[in-house]
Length: 253
Ligand code: FPP
Image (cartoon, rainbow, N blue to C red; front, side, top):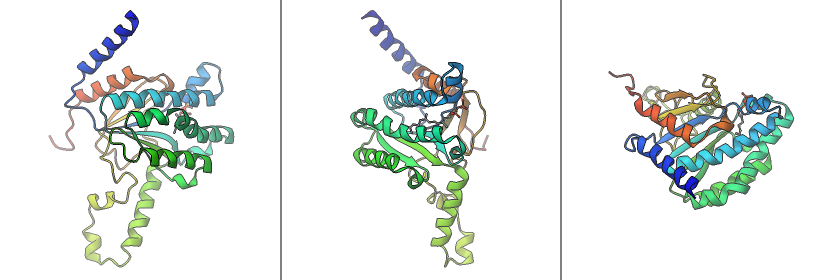
């Protein structure tokens, strides 16, 4: 009983420590370190991915409770296909497992599930689970949980250019000269979301790895040393606290 009270109190203190008027609307996360987490425990890499899926639940709950509007998670890149078949197959099963076990809570928490990436290239079972979750949560108005699956920033931009050029094939030189960033953004997979104010990468690596390369132009980057399976609500809040201490200038003074 005492333990429970203490835990709630701690959580409350953390929330109070955050400036609720300066919360990021959109947080993007590169969930890195699953393999190393497993290796440290002499376990197969897939155990790390399983534990990583559990962390997604923890962080989704935390983000939702904090009133974050968008959370984009890099789950599988266009380059991850080069991993061993066993690992790829296992990761492709995780959205199914995740949604089987977590969709009722997502619905209860008013979370909307969306994806970016080349979803139609995924195995059928993965597509079906994702589509069902999207349909069942389409009208939810709380956190939008966006999985980047079979996603790559360069591929996204090329795909956007291809679509735009097909639409603009009869464009005049004047039309082409008048093209703006705002116009091109409509051809990106993230067209319906604001750019992330905050990017978090776990596991101590300091790279962008082809993630949201257009959208992160002015984001604050925070590199957290925990492996993704060890990342938790307290770490998320600490990252937001650090974000709140940064001065965002967008190229100005
Ligand atoms: C990076 O760690 C992690 C991945 C490439 C896969 C992440 C996938 C999940 C957490 C599960 C996805 C689940 C859903 C619900 C979409 P790494 O394997 O590169 O770790 P390492 O750098 O330590 O080897």
